[in-house]
Amino acid sequence: MSKSLSGKRVALLVTDGFEQAELTGPKEALEALGATAEILSAKTGKVTGWNHTTPADTFTVDKTFDTAKIEDYDAIVLPGGVVNSDTIRLDEMAVELVKDAARADKPIAVICHGAWILATADLVKGKTMTSWPSLTDDLKNAGANWVDQEVVVDGKLISSRKPDDIPAFNQKLIDALAV
Image 1 (tube, helix red, strand yellow):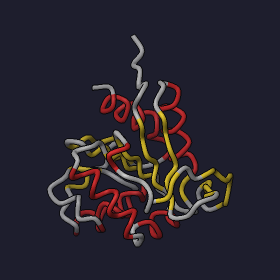
Image 2 (tube, one colour; image 1 turned 90 degrees about the horizontal axis):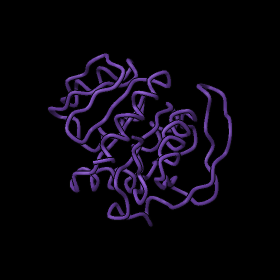
Image 3 (cartoon, rainbow, N blue to C red; image 1 turned 135 degrees about the vertical axis):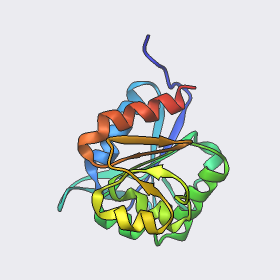
């Protein structure tokens, strides 16, 4: 029997330079099961995804970090992309939304370089997680137990390494929302 996520709302937090597949993969999987997946960013208008190091498509922003309230969402997704991840972790409103999600015990699904914001938000200490390998030292230094696995679930934290892991990542996110 297929799982329905009808009525579930998920926030995807990005800035320009996010890894496009890490937004579109989870967004499409969630919407296919009836969830609403909204793109949140620092500014209104459009954000630009990247395919690794090349700018790709633009996407409409549904809400800004400063107008979004975590109570309106059942989970958040943090796509990677070096440019996005380095920028978003410096945005105080984005960091606060992530902290709010953790305080509210909502699933936080992060992939690739997206884990930088979790370190900035001081949310990785004592957590077992994975990421793109270049974040290993950053996450360990922030107190995480870093492992090299396709997808890791530690409580409400779901983490994955790279675009190739998106199917497994999506399944764990869907499982977390279907309860």
